[in-house]
Structures are given as structure tokens and as C-alpha cells.
Length: 505
Ligand code: NAP
Ligand code: MG
Image (cartoon, rainbow, N blue to C red; front, side):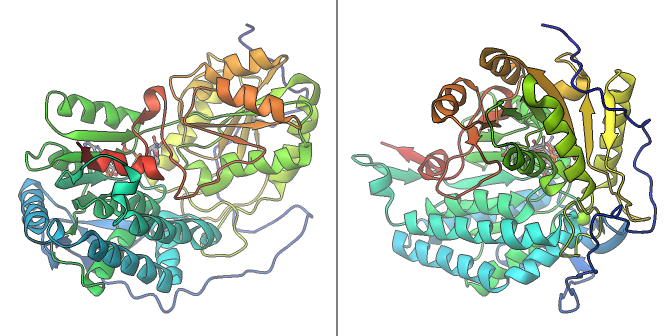
């Protein structure tokens, strides 16, 4: 297999790291008037405490850290940092709640609380969407139309299962595990919380959850909902902090199950710490999703799909279609159309309803993406970035394509977690599938073709948990989600998502 493939003869521009400029200029395509989402009614405190045993509690260390708005680089609020003492307190509260209330009340009663949480998220959906965009940088259109409605849908879905576990596992006795320790990343903060908390509560477990350091606010707002819903004290505990706080949860003896979503690197550390312990665990880790476009695919539809697969949520998507594999005969056409479409994408204020690509979640991630752009160029790949302007302050990255890359390039092998797409070509279906599977990851992929038979044949051969066909990034609470290989173990969502939280006899 040739290491380098010449995918296009288009003249490429020299690489410049994303640099700020003040004017929004859409290069004569079309201009939109600003459509800012008002954030005036949002009430945020200056400082947030830990939510333990139904109360907002100061951290034992007295330490706080700032959460930043990545679109402005300005601090939004101070967040408490939990240490081992706080985790101990949270685990004890969760244990007490498990033994005294949550495992004692009827399954139907548990379901009612979860339905109530779902309805409260719906009622306060706009507020949650705005806070998610302010704290995490994602466009309001996505947090409003994807993150928050899906989070509510997960609570509705699992609320329905609470009193039907005997139907989920026929002829088995179903027992809850006890206390679940849950650790989530920053790319879909409230949605990942929903993926974790909803099935845990529905199966009768109590929870200690840590959101990511850069996106704690919606989890803390969710704590307010738990209080408003009258959820018994200690059933849900939210402990904020950095990696050490997560490690303290993983290593606490009073925890029966760990559910982690995050990088493969941290997933491996967690797996090592849990080896030999009795704790059950599920790990949802990184990805490097192949998106395969066959010559008979509807090209315009596929181009929209490619854009959605990699630029959705700034490419901060574990299942992003970050490796485009396009059949040779249509490669130049697809690349030209992609470049044209990229020029129309609006990068900027996450709170503007026209924005397609918001802010990169943190300075650290922004630097990591820029580092990968340099690595790509130094490896000899051809870079193409959209020529759009980006705001002066904040962490913004232009949508980027790399052509002239091969399997051995780091930008093809490693997860970048940003709006950066690599493009390779293939001649036969076998070659496309081989390239798609040539990765340690296996979370998700896409296939675009006019032929149903090709969808099934290729879909079955791609070694990943999800394969979308003629679409990308579709989620539903009823569908299981999870990885092959280094993308993790266990499934979340659907009926499969109940199993990691129960003992079956
Ligand atoms: P990360 O660095 O692995 O962090 C994930 C979570 O673990 C955060 O809450 C983090 O805290 C915490 N953490 C860090 N070190 C820890 C340790 N030693 N022990 C326990 N917890 C620890 O990942 P990230 O950068 O936040 O998220 C991006 C990654 O998540 C990507 O690789 C992406 O593919 C993956 N992801 C996977 C899925 C999936 O379903 N498979 C979904 C979304 C994201 P701090 O943030 O405070 O450091
Ligand atoms: Mg933030």
C-alpha cells in the first residue's frame, strides 16, 4: 500500500496557525445579520460548591478553580475542587441513600423521580443550552437542538425502564449494584451526565459523578434540579475537580461500579487501577472514525454528511468522522465541493444562532489542535483551511482539511479532537475497508453509497461499535453506543445500557 496518496492537484495555501481577525467576512457568499441568543435571564452564582447529600457543601481544602468561557477567555464562576475527603463524604452519602431509601422505595417510585428530572430539564432547556454554550464553547444551535433535548430524552427513556427491569432481563432476578462512580468529559457535558445518571438511577443505584474541569456548570445546575425534584438526599452527588478528583473516585473502596467516558490514555490508567478489584466498569474512550464515500454515493448529500461528521461540535466528538476515505473516481469532485462548502461555514460566537463552529473548549485543547496542524504540515501533508475570519479573542480554529496523507501519518493515526479532517483515497471496497480498520480505535464510522447491499457488506466489515449509512452523528437513547478495540468496553444507551448497572441471577 502506497504510504502517500496524491488525492488532489489543487494549489494549497501555506499553513498559518489559526490567527485572529476582527471582521466577519463570508467572502461574498452570503451574509447573515447577527442573531445573538440573549443570555440576560441566566442566573449564575460567582461561586459553586460541591453537591453532597442533597446540600451544596464547601470543599474540605477550601480550594476553588475558575471556569472560563472559551469564546471570551473570561472567567464565568469559581468551582469547588473536591479532594479525597470530599469524595469519601460523597461516597458515604451515596451509600446511606442507597441503603436507606433508593433501594427501599418501589421501582415505580424511582421511575417517577427520573421522569420528574426529565421534565425539569425540558422546562429549563433554554437556560441549560445557553450555559452549556457559555461554559463549553459549542454553538447554541447544537446545545439547544441536540445536547439538551437528547439529555432529557435519555432521562425519559430510562425512567420508563425503572419498573420494567424484569422485562428487560426475562427469567432473571435483577439486583442493583450499589454506588456508581461516574466520570465524564467536556465535549457533551449534560448529555454525558444523562448517559451516566439516568440508567444508574433507573436500575436502583446511587451516584457520585464528576464532570470535566472545564465544563462543570450544567452538572451543578442539574444538582439544583435534583433538589427541586425532591430527589432523596445523597442519591445524586456532584463532585467537581480535576483528574485527581476523578482518580479519588476510581480508587475509593466504597464504590461498586465505575463508568468512565474520556480519553483512551486515562481509560488505560483507570483499567490498571481497577485490575483485581471487585468493581464493575465500563469505559467509553477515544476514536478516529472512518467515513467511507463510494463512487455511487449521492455526492452533495455526502459532502453535507462529511461536514457534519467532522465539524459538528468543533470536532470534539469521540465518534467524529475524522478520516475521510473517498473512492478515487470522485475524490477531486468531493474535495472541491468540501472546500466550497467549508468557505460558507461560520466560525465564531457560540451564542450566535448562525454559528456553525463555536469555540474550542479550552486553551489546552486549542494548543493541542494547533500542534497537530503543525505536525501535519511537517509530515508533508497538504493543508487547506477555510479563509473565514475568526474572532480576536477566544479559542477558535478554522475548519481544516489535510490531503496527501498516508496511514503512517500521525494526523491520520491519532485522535485530534478538533475540526481537522484527513482525506485518503481507495480504489476497491476491500482497500477502503482495510484502511478504515487500520486503527487501534473502533468507535464509529460512516458509509455513503447508493447500494443497500454495499451498506450491509461494508457496515459489517468495519470494526466499530456504530456504523452510520448515508448519514452521520445520529443519536437516540434507545440505541446502544460503545467501542471496539481501544475505543472502550461496555455499551451505553438502550437496553444494553442497563446491564452494566445490574447483577443478574
Ligand atoms: P480525559 O482527559 O480522559 O478526561 C475525562 C474525564 O476524566 C475528565 O472528567 C477528567 O477530569 C477525568 N480524569 C483525568 N485524569 C483522570 C484520572 N487519572 N483518573 C480519573 N479521572 C481522570 O478526556 P477529555 O480530554 O476530557 O475528553 C476527550 C476524550 O473523551 C476524547 O478522547 C474522546 O474521544 C473521549 N470521549 C469518548 C466518548 C465515548 O463515548 N466513547 C464520548 C465523549 C468523549 P478533568 O477534565 O478535570 O481533567
Ligand atoms: Mg468552561
